[in-house]
Length: 174
Image (cartoon, rainbow, N blue to C red; front, side):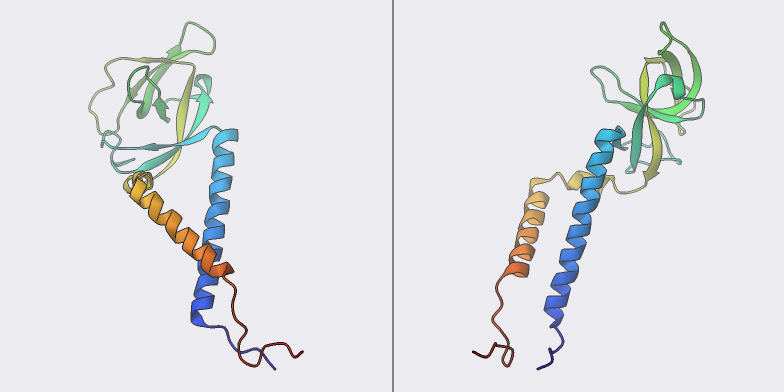
């Protein structure tokens, strides 16, 4: 007997499973990139880089040697005991070693350079930024959100693999 069309619920479940699988593959690729290419995310809570990178944006950054930095690059500098700072490079000079550079930076929204230059051997250069998603990414770390996503994924997987009773007329003849 020919098989009838599948129910809308079953098709919706299949679509959701494919979306979840694709999301899993994307996560795996991003983790591999993070470790092999030294790529991380920076969330912007202030508007010092507006309008280029407004508050609430997320930037994808990659660690590079300071020798590769050029004036005009937007870089993140890690500071001991303080939060990192991400601003545009306004000047570069040599440091105490061949790998070290002394850079001066300024936020695009600021009228003056940062008060002190930064001595660095490596920085994180901004590859690109996406405005307005910092809240979403930060929210993913909320235990309630993580618990809800885990519960939803569990329900979807259990539902997808739950044994189905054969439909009338489809049972095998013995």
